[in-house]
Length: 179
Image (cartoon, rainbow, N blue to C red; front, side, top):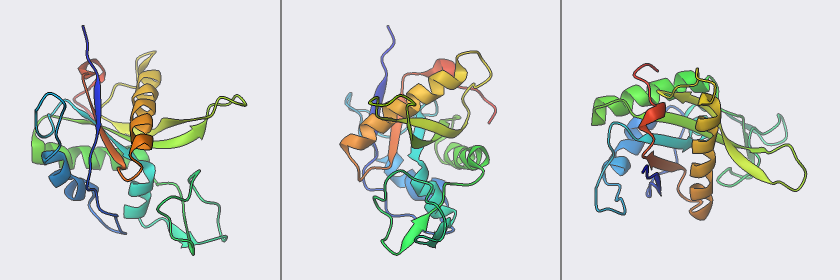
């Protein structure tokens, strides 16, 4: 029987333009407490990051009202500023993955997530994968599984809005060695 766990990563500071995302989140991943008592991250975990923190690290800021915002909500975006969606998300996910692999070993999966309407009125909003690295998107169900992981992480993030990073454990079947 497969057991999937998803936990928030507390203590992630606000990222700023030029930050190395893997370097900023690594100490918090290293201290992560799991329900079974395990501490830290394993090389076959999947790290899901809210697209906002990547966009902030990429410096995707603009003056409010000059361009459309890339995010559904304005939580953690200063009033005078707007924030465009992150750029080159698959490439950025690969860079974050390599940074985490260098620090933790293994080849963790990385998903950059963002909120989107489900397409049907009254069905709400779900997180989807904007980009990923280390997860198999080439199989017929690959993209659906990755979006499901992003949606799971989105639910967990909603329970702790101050935590823009979630680690999911227990889904090694979708992992790949390549970015």
